[in-house]
Length: 124
Image (tube, rainbow, N blue to C red; front, side, top):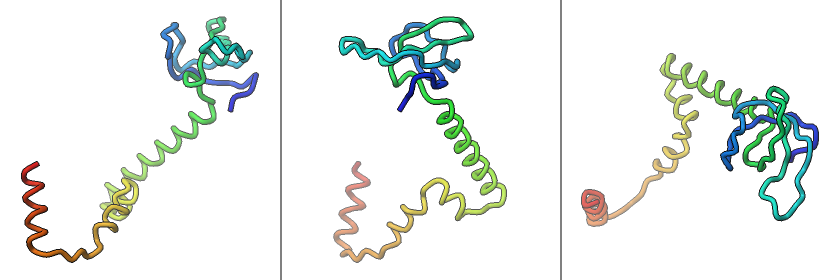
């Protein structure tokens, strides 16, 4: 997934080693020692230091930007759906449409079965 020289962003500090979260860095080496928990060596030019990190602590800059763009566009669509009172768009964005379609199927059950289900739910 990662290659030497790639620009990455520090997103976590799993081993609590004082990593500067949300700072940019460059992958300068790969740690292939099987006894080491760390996978990469990252150089942070802003503070002029190198840190060993695990893959869970870093992410590609492009990936973070794409996730943020998706989140912002989803929030904008939700705001638009609420402002225009577009219930269909709102349900689609929240993923409620599939659940409603599954519940629309007519289920034939006896009156005793229905009462038993209601009593079970009321008991819980």
